Length: 430
Image 1 (cartoon, rainbow, N blue to C red):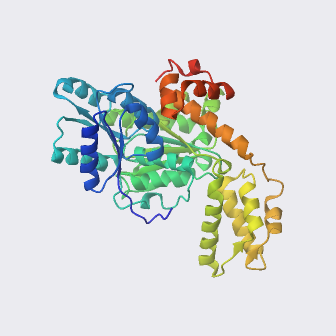
Image 2: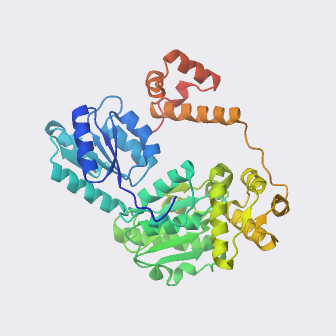
Image 3: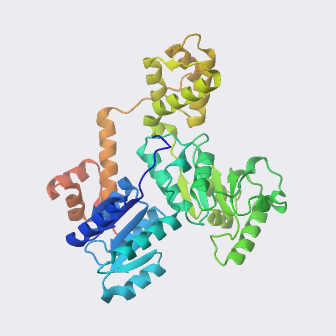
């Protein structure tokens, strides 16, 4: 993706009245918004993962999954995503209750055009949508659907004051994502301060760390390495600021983002990390995938690193085709950071403009991984798709079959083939 390309704000519109759905879509598209119309809440929830909206406008009363149910599901999956509800006069009390549950606001039918556009503009502004395009995420190179989902979560939470915990293996880009969240937030013009928790003194929070991040974002990098004494002091400071702000998750002056490559829950169980601090920091959790789970990004990242090195050295080098294949099929325990180091090393050692596969083999040693076969990958995708659709429908096979556009008999056969039981998806905590 070219990070300088501007994009339209994406709005998901949900209503079971075809006429109103069409009218809202026309009005919003006329204002240069990208609109995805959906006829019910179940379809909308499935579309949200693909479309990654910046705003949702939904009818309150719908069959299968109503506006309240859709609001709850969206809040679980994408905290910070703004939702505007549409309501008839008789259901205004329900809409007011919905705003108390987290809806951004509501519009009464028939929807007046200027009121609609004013609500949309206000919601997008508060959510932190950057009209200027994708500049906030310029340093993150990806075409992976999985990474795009994580970036969508990051962009949505950027407009809130919620604390964020970013987890992932070493080298996956946790600090980069934290900086992107800051850049997409209303605090973007204020300081971004990084505190390396694996190399700090125990009395770090007794100094002016919070003051240095005043009005901006404080990144607690590798929070899992923070000494116990410093953990207690941090907890005390967060409590003091929460009391001042009147809300447990917010700070009046500093936004907190934490990162770690450790299993914090395991540290809590082992008495090495405070449980109360864990829940204070883990308001919104974003887990970054390993590079081995986003292999489609490897050629893109390699091209990016080669271009950067060409700017530094004035010498343009490329990989031989078989070398690119080896890079794309290798295991990367050090993830993107390791890949960048290998590319830099290969460019330094290559004696010709074309980097041979032998040089790559020397750099990565025996880390080549076995990619799944086409059949194995297809089966894995099918099982994941079936699991997701059963989760959306709460194990209702009839609804799931309709969404998948398969008859019930074929759908049951698919479930049996992939050893999935509809009952496992029923009556789950929402």
